[in-house]
Image 1 (tube, rainbow, N blue to C red):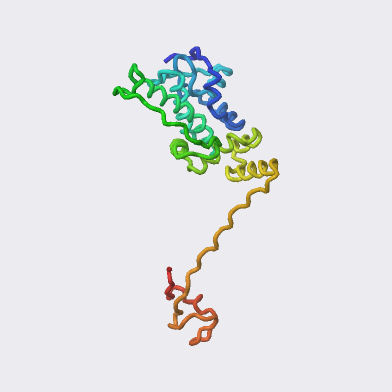
Image 2 (cartoon, one colour):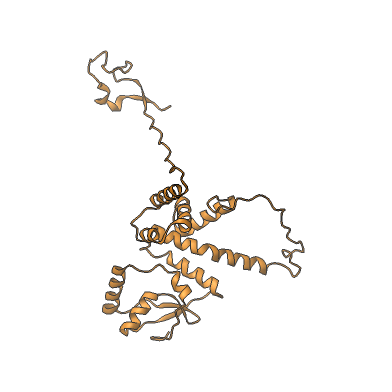
Length: 262
């Protein structure tokens, strides 16, 4: 390891990392000025993968730092995958920032999977055992990205698991990534707006633009109440107990009651 080495900043790599908030940058700068840079910056072939904020502060203020070379990364797609997976370990990410990282990870995983599949094929285009892959005849497909196929649902669930969020949150985030404006996305990144609320707002705007009424939320079913079989006195429950003549005497002896769970 060397002090203040020459490091290249890749704009594409830097864009994958959620930026720190102003107060977070200020706190990091105070920490680096008072205590120095204890954590090494991660590079790959001289390109910075992790520690962009620390690198800028240290460079601007002449603070020495150390670097470490990442292992197991052979190309740019794997480097981008490493950056995103490493960002999931940050504790200061909002829910939408985590889902946004997972959305950026989706095409990278698809590209790596395609490269692995092509590497396993034979020279004749077969799958490694001399049997060529045959495409099924074209069928009618729903091209609306909001209508997910079974494969799309499995992908959403896998991405949600990597991001540590629920599949429904992941589905909301994918919808908002396609339809929400940048101002709404900034509120989501800052945690000022919930995913479900943002989805309702976007759908309401779409309905208003198309002249259709906004979809009404489904009514919530009324909660089931337990049915009283008999009161503590052994009689059927009535507004006034026929034995003790007290109204609603079951409230006073609740623990003695038998309830029908059906």
